Length: 248
Image (cartoon, rainbow, N blue to C red; front, side, top):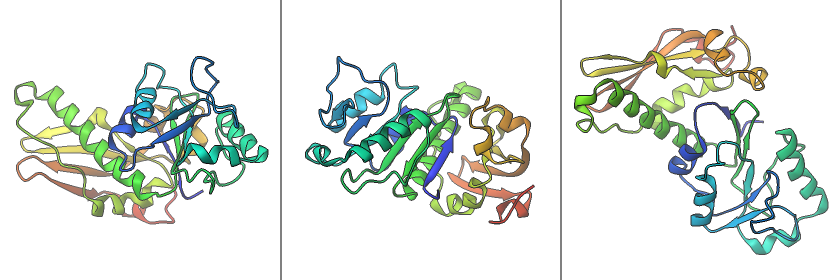
């Protein structure tokens, strides 16, 4: 499914902080908490309003959540039993029976946490994921830089990766790409992030330890950030990896 993403390392907090259209209401597809508000039509816990949603998704339990957003609480009563069963299946099996975008809910996302901690997220508008990724990569790079350069903590703001570079990376996503922050290199004003692609589909590894991705991956390129001019640059090492039909 083209609007499905599978990531490891982008947390729920990252999602809430960086997604361009935050969810304003959600139904929890996790186990029902009787202490929280329950929608009488679907039987799911519901959280209404951006502040309530943000508080729930930022709580101590936020590492393992499954949820779907919706537009209006008044529309929940129109969910058919079949649609409720599809939502139950999503939360239990971590996959869809049909495309999980519902006219009645007008949802933009379905957010699932897999047993290994990976995040499986369906986006109605896939560019929202690209913007989230571009912002999150910059945030993580800033964290790594400040850890390595304690004296210069506040001197360098990091700009979001431009959409043109994200667009060049999209052909890597179907095979699975690893941004290896563990091997970031800093040389004067240049910071480099190795990019690797796995020899087998990332979806085949979704139940296993995510570090397997690095162990079985091959270097295909690097992202460079230049502190003095605040610019990103893509270095292509294996051109074939950036072709749509690429496969090791």
